[in-house]
Image (cartoon, rainbow, N blue to C red; front, side, top):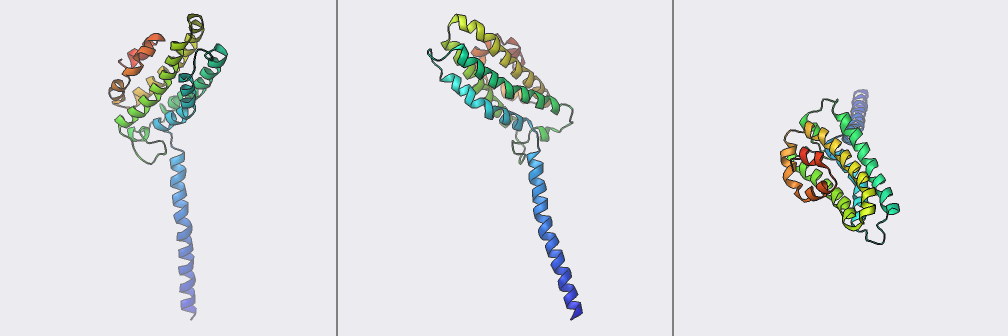
Length: 200
């Protein structure tokens, strides 16, 4: 009887240990995914904030497109871009593989270069569509005040892309054909550096 009692205790302890280990292992995977910093996650984090701001610019009209309205929006757009620049700069020194750089936002899959290019293009088009909308509705005097602010946003994007394009092999080739719709805005803002960088 003592033998069977001992076996039963050992089996119960082993089962309990397994039950604890399985959730712990799964939790470790979740933590790993959450701590993943990839290019997709950096862009997603930034543009979660930027998207509604850029869209709000599209819906401005001649009555509310004033310096007092527009300037704070531009400042709010710049903040997550600065954070994104810090994040992609940090990626440079981490020795990450292409697969790590191409991880999806949640870290559960590796994106193709084409898929990452589409994600970035969608974000850039959304942003520059908003910036371009400003130029189409404000007068010359206000445009002269706002263009330096919009140009500064473009330079932040340029600095981010310089790093990202250097990190991901083949990204420029995949990205360039997707950005034809923003060429006019980049020209209007004098963002020649972005046009050259993106081969537009």
